Image (tube, rainbow, N blue to C red; front, side, top):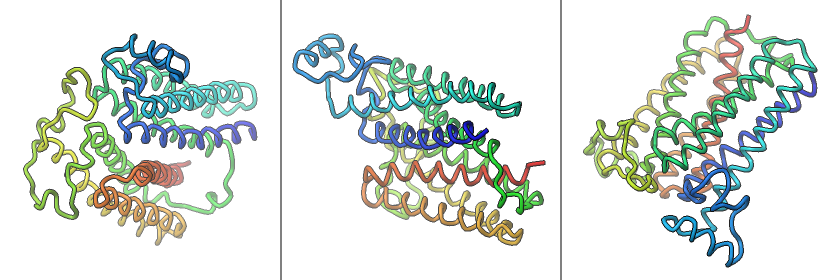
Length: 324
C-alpha cells in the first residue's frame, strides 16, 4: 500500500505541474504552438536549427513557426504523457499490491480519464482551439488531479481525520463543491474565450456596474472557430458577459464558503475552516490582481493553481462528511 500512496502523491505533484503548464500555454497564446499532434511540426521535439525550422514552415505554411510558443505547447504535452505513465504504473500496483477494490476501480477510471485527456489534447489542436473542446480538456486536468488525490486519501490513514466528525454538514459541503466546480467552469470558459481582460477595471467593468453584455453569444457552446480560435472571435459584449458572470459567481461562491466555514468552525474542524478561508482569500486577491495589473503571467498561473488547491480542500471536506 505504501507504493500506491507514494506513487499517487507523485501523481498529485505532477498533475499540479501539468495544470500550471497548461495555464502557461494558454496565457502565452501557444495553444497552436505546435499545429500537429503528438509531435511538433512533424518532429518529436520542437525544431531548433534553421534546416528544421524551414522544413517545419514548409509543412505548415498557415502556421509560422515561433519557438517561444512551440516550447510551452510541447513541454506541456511531454509532462502530460509522463503523467499517463504514472497512471499506468498505478493501475499495475493497485492490482498487484492491494486487495482494495475501490482503489482498483479508481485507478482504472483515472487511466481511462487520462486517455480521454490525450484524445481531447489531439482534438484541441485538430479542431483549432474549439472552445468547448478546450474547456473540456482543461476541466479534465482538474478531474485528473482530484482522482490522484482521492486515491492518495484511500491509500493511507490520516489519524487526524479520524478525530473529525462533520457528517452533519453534508448538504452545505456538497453545495459548496458544486458551486466551486461551476465557478471553475466559468474561469475556464473565461480563459478559453480570451475574456480575462474584457473588464480592465475593478470593481466596475468598463466603468460601469452594468456594462453592455451579450450572454447569448458569450455562452454559445457551438461557436465557429474560423481558420482557428487563437485570440478568440467573440465581440466585446460577449466577452464582457463571460467575465462579468465569473465575477458575480465569485460573490455567490464566497457567500456559500463563508457558511461552510462557519459550520466547520462550530463542528470542531477549525483547521479545515482556516484552510478554506486562506485559500479563498488568496484566490480572490489573485483574481483582483489579474484585472488591475493586466494579467501578469505568474499571477495568472497561480490563480489556476490556487483554484486546484481550493478544489482539493473542498473535496477533502466532502470526503470526511460523506465517509461511512
